[in-house]
Length: 397
Ligand code: SF4
Image (cartoon, rainbow, N blue to C red; front, side):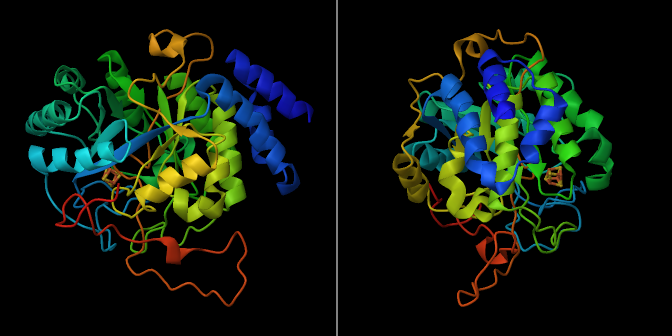
């Protein structure tokens, strides 16, 4: 297909595809899906080989958020039966992080619900970052605390944070439909603050919220313009008890096309499969490793992922390898802080730092007797997190 040959050539040159080309990837047929994966896979292997970076989420503070992000189980008025707790102590967070690192994670993502941190919260998280770094040599720490005020990114950097995540989530045009308590511009401002402080910026999207193909292309192009080092791609987990609880509109094939389009637009950036991987890609997860070079190990913020051991087995069976702490994630031109040329770049982590993943409280049993289609809602695959941070049970790692 001429389209795919063109996109591979552009991806290898870090040249921005046209919007029409990006839209055409989303419009490909199921018959062409493996060709799309193979083409985007060439770009992925050129920049990242067969390495898969593992990231581990630690939810420092869960639920009780005053913001109203429609996709989020922690939002104001959420009826989802998630764990709710206030700030973990540094040693509690460090213990949870150590479990992820022992499981193979290279980066720990410290996430807290809320509009943004107070200066006291930044102190708290700074202590936590120091505790994690002392106990886990070589680990990368990404903070995800919401909207930042002046000076806070610099303080996190001084405390040892390597990265800061804040997702754009959706296009500027539709942002007001998913959240009213803050704006798209607020989110852009925080990503820019992280950049300016010398933190590696991580910013991504959530697909499956009822957006159009044009919206998806818009947000991915906006991410490239913002030039994060990592771009988490979340697939909405429609939590019962949230406004988007009935938005089951993704198929595994659609998820693969979205990941491929993201890879073509952000070829040399860490593209991470974030929340919703198990729920929406299901048995097609291994194919997605040909597109993304990064995943979350184990559980998400408020919902459970597949067993960490199953993640590792999937990576090995698919012919990929877990990236070690002695390996550099980004291509040389980006790792050196250089790639801010031409059409800008892209970056990482998702579901809304705060906001990745969530699931209906009561999962319906599987109706194995009836054949399913790829488009059927899979509420049976959504399970609220009941282990790890904020509980007495061991984390999944
Ligand atoms: S995404 Fe973050 S800011 Fe929005 S409701 Fe969830 S926890 Fe709050």
